[in-house]
Image 1 (cartoon, rainbow, N blue to C red):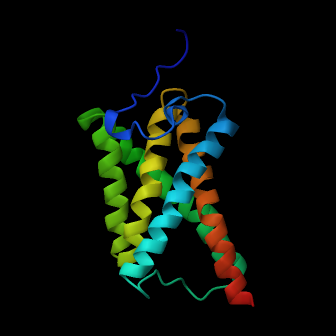
Image 2: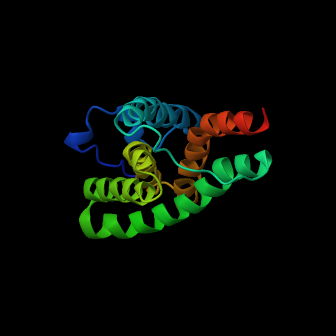
Length: 169
């Protein structure tokens, strides 16, 4: 087979779509990865809100447009730059699966420092973002950074719009 080597599909992640581990058809891939991140995180959010009511994150009282920018553009770019850099090191040292797990747990813990319930939800999308990064880095480092940024922005878009609507309404 010519082209980039496929990312391994570790047995513990075999329940995820095979396409998530194949760096092909970027637009289709984004839709699959976004769905894999977003819908389970909705379920986790519902569960976390029952376990830890009123423990969600506090957002700054800023202009709604700025808040939208911060959540949909700034945070995904900055967090993906950090995540990707760490993943490059983790995968080299520990391998694909440990890198993905450590990354997602690390992001869950980091977000838990701001709000416990948030960390319970955030680890899942970051598991998907980490898989996306390591899968696509075999093809292109630029795309490996770009796709998780895009998927993360899409992940944040719905909640950000709800927040902005609540602030301006």
